[in-house]
Image (tube, rainbow, N blue to C red):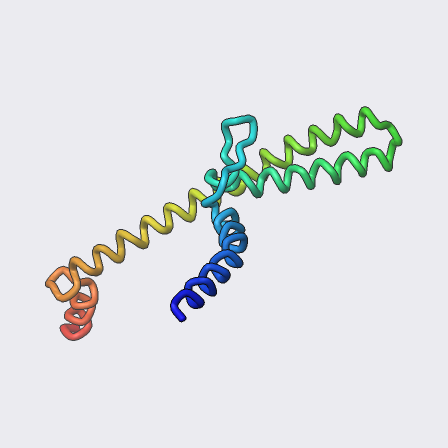
Length: 136
């Protein structure tokens, strides 16, 4: 009876391993993807989105220029320029918002820490407000 249970559990584990490996890759646990050997797309914030939007921008610019002029080489050049501009533009936009978010998180963490430290003491802002309202 126990051997059957072990065999069933092995079958279940064997059936889940590919799915768990896929989950690991999606969560960034699996092998990393580096661009030019230096930029790890999974670990650097905003890198993945910047590359994807840059690729889309390149495709749109190159296709639009080709449809307008029918010049292949010049359309390719415009596509490369569109990739660079779109990638850098989105990179700076995303990193700016990321920095703003980090600053807001830091301010909130400090406020929560101060709330825990000063709660119930004479320095608690809520107690000061109640004393000021009650005294007036």
